[in-house]
Amino acid sequence: MFVTRKLQALKATQLSQGYKAFSALAGLDAKTPKEKLTFGSTFSDHLLEVDWDKTSGWGAPLIRPYGPLAIDPAASSLHYALQVNLTSYRPGLTKLCSAGTMNLFVYWINEQGEKELITAPLTRGDILPGVTRQSILELARGWGEFKVTETTITMPSIVKAEQEGRLLEVFGSGTAAVISPVKLINYNGKDVNVPLDAPDGKSGQLTKRIWNEMTDIQPRVESYTIYPSEFEEVDVVLTRWYAHHGIGRLNVLLQCMERMRLVVFVHAVLYGRQDVLDIIHDRLQFVHLDQNAEACGKPKLVYKWKDSFVLAAHHGHVQSLQYLHKNHFKRTSDTSVWFVAAANGHVGILKYLHDHDVEGWRHSIMEEAIKHGQLEVVRWIYDNKSDMQSLAVVNQALGVALEHRQLGVAKYLNQLWHAKMHR
Image: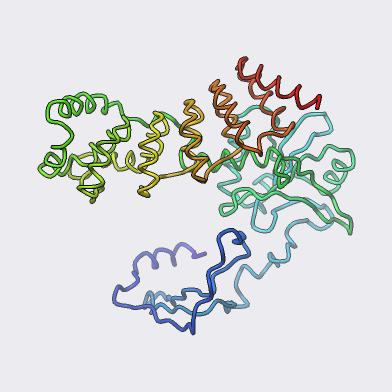
């Protein structure tokens, strides 16, 4: 990391456009299949290296084979043996610090019988004030379901909790991985086993829940009020125009008024006008959307265009969704499409996403349907998603339904639960 004075100097320099990257590669390895990519352990076979100094700025880029970097022995990252985790335990006091470069969280039942999420306090001076750490604390406190505490954690207290069956989960948090569950801690030559009781067996339930909530916030999945009221007026105008002139003259309108293309496109998605989408795609190819939005003084509509998948899912327009999917239009998040369709009860959209293997399915989508009382969606999810058919998942879903007083959904889930119990 650069100190402030170096950062200011860095901002004053730019990588010259006149430079061309020189390649020192003899060849490239075959790409690793997507399904075999492993976070943190699968790397490219090459890297880009550019020298920089305060006087000359950036040098010529060099693409060279992947390999070790030369580090000055005086580099601060080497001073405290961070890479061998000597900071994890303070000698003698066994206070937990960081998990490598991640903040550490412990979820347990404390000695007073309360469920509690704990992380080390920043006041000690040896804890990284991570952004993800702060986000998790705010998120958990907002739920109000268990105690959230910033206090010192010691290894003897962890060992005791594990022996008494009070240790529930341990996980690290950081910018890259967001959440990383801990399965085992080796302390004084003995293993402390951490439960992994989520349906997928890879993390605890709270760890999985926090990961889902955090990653859903990033593409704005948690918000469903993204549909501009101004399109009600647009709908009145365009509906009258279509009725008077016919769809066949739409290309003439758009050629004469190029800046209308974006508005017409978003309206077609929002109101399920497949005939309009076909004309835009076949005759005009719908180019320069960003420029059109800027020209008509509606730059925010580009965001609506990029969220056109969500618009179609919100209103249940299967044909519009199919058009967008087949023509590879931009979208902010496939997960948000699943969530919006579930929350608004559009089984047809969910079926399309399922049949065409659209990514983004998560267990918490069932909870979203339950919270909104979408019984038909809950039925469809149970019938079509094998990972949602276990007794543990049904029992958890039943709890969500009761918590949100969705009695119709609760009755259905209760019937499923009893049927599974008596098999």
